[in-house]
Length: 157
Image 1 (spheres, rainbow, N blue to C red):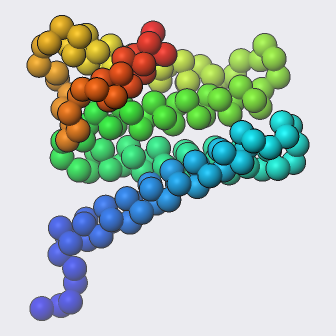
Image 2 (image 1 turned 45 degrees about the vertical axis):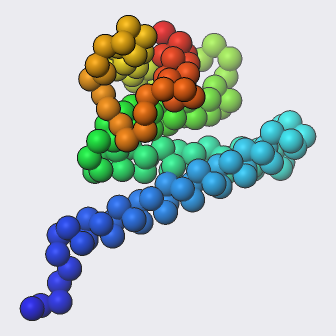
């Protein structure tokens, strides 16, 4: 025995680390978002807390996408993580760009939104009509989750 970790143990360790970073990013995002929301707009504290919010939320979304791909039965979270990244990134672009200016990043954002529209609209239609959804997750697609999916679909369409 060489003392080398097995591939499955290594994957498990990476997934645990990804969960920690994902949850940490979300926690920092919630805290910094509260500070930004309740601080004087355009003030130094607001700008710094907003920057921390953007970075930590993007980290949370990236690791959500990673976990959605590596953990079986989480494919719906691939779309939700991508949507979270899209929302934060395009909000940041809105703040940073001059009014009326459109660059390549905005065009990429539009492309991502159009790509996300298809799975969300398909899932929303299937859930509204009682059809069996193409996308399944570990959380039942009912109640608040159902409302969130309908809301995400409405934002994207």
